[in-house]
Amino acid sequence: MHHGPRRRSVLLAGTAGLATAAGLTSTAAAAPARTTPVAPPPPALIPRPRTLEMTGGRPFEITAHTAVAVRHRAPEARRTAEYLATWLRRATGHAVPVVAFGTAPHAITLAGDDETPSAEGYRLDVTHGGVLLRATEPAGLFHATQTLRQLLPAAAESATPQASPWTIAPLHIEDAPRFPWRGAMLDVARHFFTAEEVKRYVDILAMYKINRLHLHLSDSQGWRLEIKSWPRLATYGGSTEVGGGTGGYFTQREYADIVRHAAERHIMVIPEIDMPAHVNAAKASYAELACDGVAPPLYTGETGIPVSLCIDKDITYRFIGDVLGELADLTPGPYLHIGGDEALATPPEDYRTFIGRVRQTVHGLGKQMIGWEEVGLAEIASGTVVQFWADAKKAQGALAQGAELVLSPSKKAYFDMKYDADTPYGHDWAGYTDVQDGYTWDPATYIPGVGEDQVLGAESALWTERVKTFDEVQYMTLPRLPGLAEIGWSPVDGRTWEEYRVRLATHAPRWSGLGWQYHRSVEVPWGDPVTR
Ligand code: ACM
Image (cartoon, rainbow, N blue to C red; front, side, top):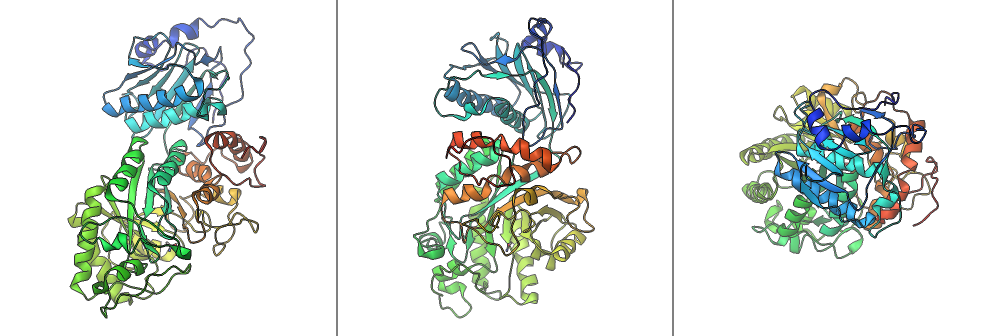
């Protein structure tokens, strides 16, 4: 991050008219040396923006007169403006109306940006007279609002009005992600989490510019999505979970609500139906899915059991066509994740046959297939997204067929791994992953022979065999998720663990303000008192 010398004007050529209308230049120029300006410290943004310049002068302050203004061709920009205004109202207690562009003298303006076309990038200018968020695409505007959020004091996260100076020091940010895929996987199968809880998880992701929510919707211990053509999958297959609790499932309406909530935050839902293994809940629900026609009992144990769909039965593929068909209709994103991992009870030749048929089904539905790294053992189409978790050879086999990789190394990005020996939840089979461990790796160099241009990005995975409650989900996610987010978004240059850990520590009061649970790792110099 470059912290340049104090500058009055941060405006780039060609946008001065818009900036003037947004109140930027005039007041920047009218900020004389009434006070002796001392450059404030750079804000502790996560993920770290590509460039940030403190430009000096008097701060911007949100007051009773501040409005949010929109000038962007996309209708979603208006929605993002409403989202920002709603958020600002809660803690500031100010009216913060959303107004037409050019009608408010003191505004936070969301505008288009023809100069730097980018799917998710944005520019952000703060001067005494106003704030200007510019992005080509609505996703960039949304990310800009999350940066703005982190520029305000932590008290801004409060749900009730706070007495705080709502000031932001003048600055100029230009930002865009390094990787297009920054994901988080949540296993709702081993333990079920409600749609409301999943939406709260999405809110955590949004703050850190994560743009994919991968839902692991089925496993041996539970089926978690209503399928209208095979209703017992949810009503019976979803009726329990690890440990024998009551489980649960999302109705299609609830699933659609999660998709909508995520889309409002520019997060794409990636649904996974795991096959041909991890299917005991499905076979328990429908005896005809078993080769011998006998339904196994529901399974509530923690460890994986050897189980496979019946590769030779026609009904297997009718089942898959029906399930993926309903899922495709409910899912606006282009991807269906078919799992494919740990098919220990499926002979290799059967596995290849099976993946080949499922691939055709997915493509027939107009979707792109995603699978865990094992699908690299089968024939896959070029452009298939393959999710690496442990075995470089399988990932390399997928790459040789033209796959693109998402990296979820179990030693780095499995949030069900304990932080250390004292962590009360989770596993340690891939080793402890404390905050530094989770932060210090690079998707572009992690797998030998795999370079940056073959990598779509990074994704965390939170398996929940030993994570029972949503408080525990948060505890395992924070503070590791911001590190994963930064790895996916920020350039490597200039980043160090020593600097990051200090920045990370300043986020704890935000999480506390939001009621989010987190692990107070000994590796992070938390300065705040414990307020949980
Ligand atoms: C996995 O951990 N079985 C993908």
